[in-house]
Length: 292
Image (cartoon, rainbow, N blue to C red; front, side, top):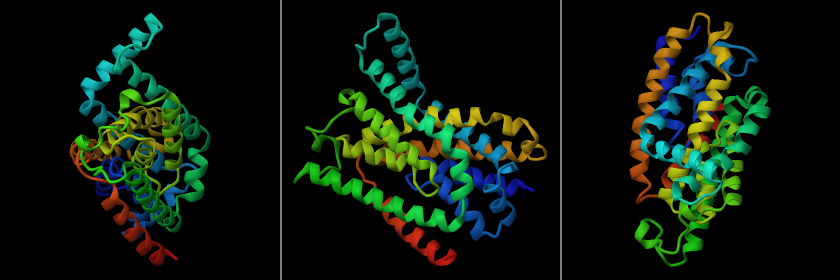
């Protein structure tokens, strides 16, 4: 059965790794195995288990932390979308951003409903997660390579050095759909949701700051919807006996997620994905050797 210590550790892990481009699902599969939490490992790949109830709480808490951090932005987006529905026109940046997020949410949402459960059961294994973590590192490096290549001799690290770069205001709906489709690959443990959507944004011309902002905003409805959709798991028999532990883990996840997005929103104004790519490659390769 899930202990309070395990729930809090997994909550902290979720809150940090969901937003850092290193894969929350991958880490939640690998760490319990390294710590010898065999009951948690077995629950992750089971068709029905208390781990499903834990995921509900952690997802909702992470999404609420993002809502709180971006509360002013979300208030403008919601007002903008409602106004554009009434006028049947998209006239402001907030209206456009709202509809871009809606378009980008659709492919990941459909993939989550259709494939999340089956992919979790099949791939929620330490060796598979370790391998996908290595792939995630390669993806991050490739994104940085494409970004540098598109910038030519210009330094891509600061906004003032990217005058010809695409901004969120200029993002097309087809590009938004591409970014949203990329997010669906995060259903594989080891592939980071924030990482792959940031890479998709970089490849399509966004800078690091706008890619991160769009990624975090896009993650909010997806993570929240995943939690709400699975709410019966928490309220039903899967949550029996673990709801206090889930609450403790969720509080830890919410605090960690808020601090993480606060840090990363500043970090990506001047820095790149490269350190996270190196981390994924090193840790992933070590874990592949460990679990092989």
